[in-house]
Image (tube, rainbow, N blue to C red; front, top):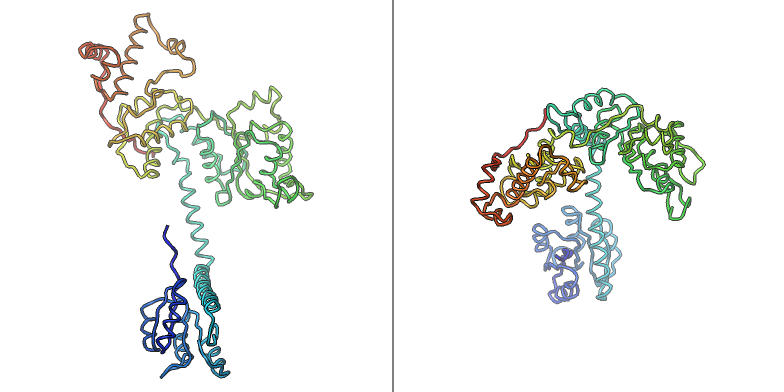
Length: 492
């Protein structure tokens, strides 16, 4: 670790022994420069930045006060100190008034006292410099600050336009995006449903940044697996001392989002008791922090999401019907990634672009074989699983293109169903026993070749086949390596 820069002190005295004594006393803590007179000292100041100047008063030609007066005019930042064996009151007054002397030190001085004075003088100089820097930063006008904020808001808003949601020209999301774009300007509550990892928060942000509340806050709270008291504190706030650990007042998410949008993720996980509290807030449009007797008005748009079927939860009595209708003025249901496989190439390229920027590791794209494997897989983890897979491929890559050999085994095998094991795998096959066995054999051959980067010698050894036997099966099943690389363009 590099040591911090030491303060620099300039000592000015026409007596050589006095200079040597000062230097020996100060050099353990400071960088010391010396000058035998005012003329030499001025040259040093022209070439060096110093924090403090320690000057003898009685010098031939120019006195210490006269020299430091000139220094104050040209270099006002350093702290100025006078050393003198005389206690002339006129010198002291002139030094204070004309030269702005920080301290007048009488001879003989004690080393410890001198060190303490110089240390404080250097600290004062550093604090003054920091104060000047802060003052300069605060000179930004409110108009400039406002322009900067508005520019950042515009960039953020442009990144969440409905057209920016990656999808193909014939994507199942197109109709959803068009529908969302129509009602996003209106102040209605929206319930977004769909399996985990389908992009519910992305749609919530798009709804906010395409609404009339786009310039106001967007806050997110995950309601899943959180005790009622903690969730109430997070959403509604609390007063100091309202419960153990409440060491200060806390503003809740509803107040933080005042004028903007609050996104309540996993709303289906809240308890029946908390559903009552939330319903009252939505009805009255006011919150009461824990431990407070005063209610506070809030103006927020509520967007909620869940991976549960809330209508079924209402029928089962686990979710209040009146709260459901408060939250679901409009409902958006996002499809699983398996239902929009046509979007996988564009999504994968988008995730790859972000990962390349994050890891500073550029590649040219995916091979066609890799994309074909991705589109054959069912993606139970949806878009989030695809994102993780692309990041993993990039980390493991050592070439210009990301090939299928970099895919996880579960993606590479591309089985129609993952959870059902062997029976469901066989159930997905049609035809006679011979046809089904051949389909399985083709799938095993393909997966083995891809994993071995189409090295036929390694694949044949793994499968217990001769190279001739492997070649015959490849010809029979018309298995060929796909070498075309693809980099899908962004949807317009």
